[in-house]
Length: 298
Image (cartoon, rainbow, N blue to C red):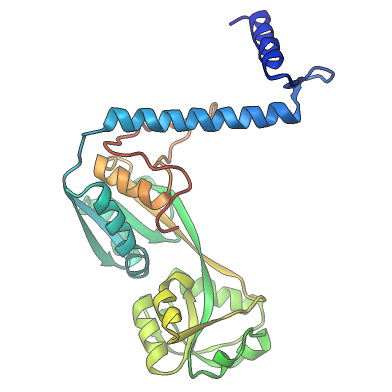
């Protein structure tokens, strides 16, 4: 379309709507408030049209077979039950099999091809792995219901200095992040017991009426029942990044792609064209598309 034709089309549209869409008094041209609203609405309509189009095209096509996923313990226990249930409604013929292990083992299983996708913390891309950032989990101060801190609505840094805690193993990156944060804050904590996974740490805090730092999602069930308390500490802000990883040399299957998209709430699209921002990875979707921003877990 020529510039003249485009200008005429816009003028006809403005006459039809009875409002001015473009501010022609400025250079470069800009949208008026009405133009901005109209443009945003059209984008929403177009996006919904594309989703409808894909649903129609893929209707009747099903996915089946096993899907192997590797996940660290805390992610598997916190997020997988809900995700698997939702995925099962969408693709009942796919058998999702979750292997729970430590971060390094998850990466190894993905690289070796034993798992299509992996769910890890502190993800790092390399020559063998593609990383798609998933979410950032708040890491919170957690204590048993009988711990002295449980009576507090908020803890100060001075309340933590010198107290006994139960912590993650020193070999874990999450523990190193916690130690670094405490050190920057001038706090010294006595970690009496250490564990290499969140589930064991949760059980130890409960059994010993103790306290520790845990990803908030890992204690949802216990805080809901009152067995554990999350105590606010505004002076300490920590997050654990989570990511989805898969091999560069072998893209996920259609089932793996859809499962990853379900977790993200958007298409599992790591590759972006730097010039136009468009993905170079074509969707392998065989079922209902995932609407952006509707992750079942994040």
